[in-house]
Amino acid sequence: MDVSLLTSCFSYGLPWLSQCFPCPSHMEEQCPTAGRSGNYKNFQCPENYYNDLASLFFNTNDDAIRNLLSSSSSKHFHLYTLFIFFSSMYFLGIITYGIAIPSGLFIPVILAGASYGRLVGNALRPFSALDTGFFALLGAASFLGGTMRMTVSICVILLELTNDLLMLPLVMLVLLISKTVADCFNKGVYDQIVKMKGLPFLEAHAEPYMRNLVARDVVSGPLITFSGVEKVSNIYHALKATRHNGFPVIDEPPFADAPELCGVVTRSHLIVLLQGKHFTKQKVLTGSNIIRSFKSRDFAKAGLGKGPKIEDVEIKDEEMDWYVDLHPITNTSPYTVVESMSLAKAALLFRELGLRHLCVVPKTPGDAITRYTYGGDGD
Image (cartoon, rainbow, N blue to C red; front, side, top):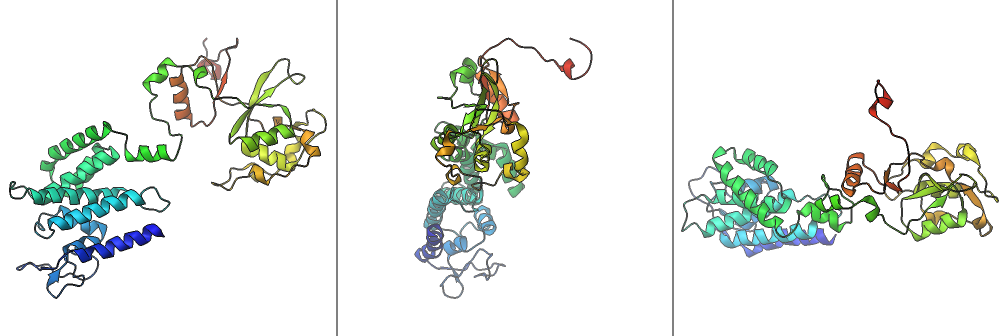
């Protein structure tokens, strides 16, 4: 609501700072124009006068960009008008991008860059014979290259806007310079937003320093694990104290000859199991019979923020000392890597397989599988 009110105040209040100018003579276009499109908006001006700042604010984004890039409107926008429009677009783009509304950044950056480029072109008009629309195009290219760090795609987009191959070398040069200068300070705006929101985004390629590390060097701890048959209180308190999504399940004697990895159980499945309250007073295996009491939708992946929560689980005091068998809900075939595996390879596994958990296990003797194991003859 605040952002909408601020944007409305900017769009309607700032045109009052601009003067009224007489419509150009000997022109085919209507002045002032009626409707949403057009180069000349009346906005409280007398007849046959127009307000150049209102012509930018009260236009559609497409027409505003077309007017800024047009070479036929070299005298339609004055210096202070372009400065006010550039400052407002830059300021509004900063405060509106990133909030939970469907507003993008591509069009505001083009508007800010085109107005800045046209402002420079108007300032250099006494010293240069270049068209101000050309300066607006280069300004839009520089802002897009410095903000989004895209080069080839932006170059193609701007080339399609102008349909002029002669501008290609200068546009490429401006994109190269803007991206190079911006890379010296920080990453692109989208990378910055991902970092600010704390999203675990993985790059397409592993960082160079990862080649000197192994998986054992970066494992997070302390590791919270559950036994194959675990006490209810341990599960409940672990879910309350952490926000982990997955927990390794370790089989210990008497259910195994030695401690070994059974698999990984997810947080949501544990909560569903606690809500079902299929507990036993003794530490015994219950088998897969308890799964029959659940429906498939109970373990289905819920939407964002709609999954089961540990706060909704009610456990009685006497049930805290009981046990629950985790084997029926455990993923017994998780992706695992040996502790001496290169961190760069582990990062590629996360990226290419779309993993959320990767178990790191110690080096132990084992067998080998080749492609001939799945079919064919050979060793």
